[in-house]
Image (cartoon, rainbow, N blue to C red; front, side, top):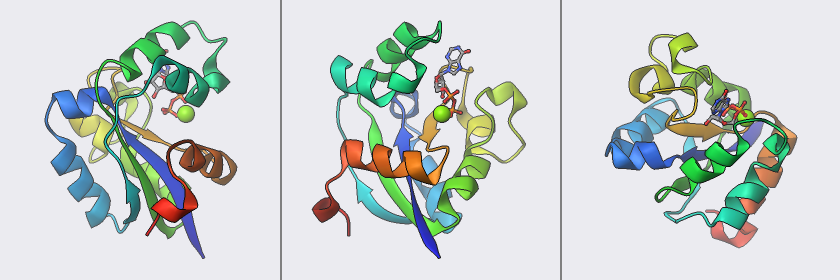
Length: 138
Ligand code: IDP
Ligand code: MG
């Protein structure tokens, strides 16, 4: 059964100008792009998106990083999309990410790690709704 997940190409991905390469890797891994936007996150929107981390020590820096430049949210679809996308991006800390993963290839640090991926189907639904109306998705 097809499933959807939310990806975000983070500000460092666009700063490094590797968004095209990362999108190609996503397409080559079999994900269909159902929605794609280019936007600047407001502080309020970033805080809301990462509210689950509000008590973590890195929350303030995370919000500052995610609002430091434009981002590209993507709604992706394939079978087992949530788990398979997490596999494609690799561990949060690129130092621990497997060879061939997007974070291993492009990320600099545990914070500046190029890409977001939803961690459960339920969170994916909420995260997709953060950026997309149903009518925006193809
Ligand atoms: P995930 O993106 O792999 O799901 P989470 O634990 O959900 O990782 O953390 C959300 C984001 O917060 C990470 O992608 C990263 O940008 C940042 N982050 C996570 N842990 C740390 C940390 O220990 N220091 C600084 N930033 C962190
Ligand atoms: Mg997470």
